[in-house]
Length: 163
Image 1 (cartoon, rainbow, N blue to C red):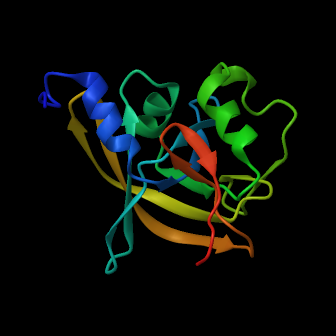
Image 2 (cartoon, one colour; image 1 turned 45 degrees about the vertical axis):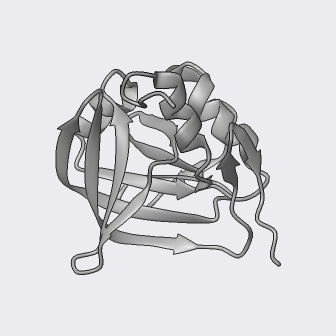
């Protein structure tokens, strides 16, 4: 077996065996426009205070926006929203919000329509780590809806089946 630090393909294969939920991070850019990207690196960090973390590639438009912004939203995608995940992962940044439903919270945060949950955060800390930055957010609000999650496993989208 080869070493994952010497073989990026092995590293990706290893991580692909971990099923994750799918989210879209949203915030505003310096001009106030909405910015978003697909992310599956959400993790709970602390209960008191309530903290979560997300990792963002330093070359991503979202990285610049998060670095400049104090607030962001984690939109937890519902089963059936794979196209939304692909949109925010593949389209050019300036096209991602074209033709989709979204709204502003009373505080001006960007929430996508139809998501399973949205988690409102204020930036708490960030840590440069390799080619990504770990952004930690303090959870300040949010809401959830009934439904099933969108999952990602071995490069494919799927759903949750109960035993």
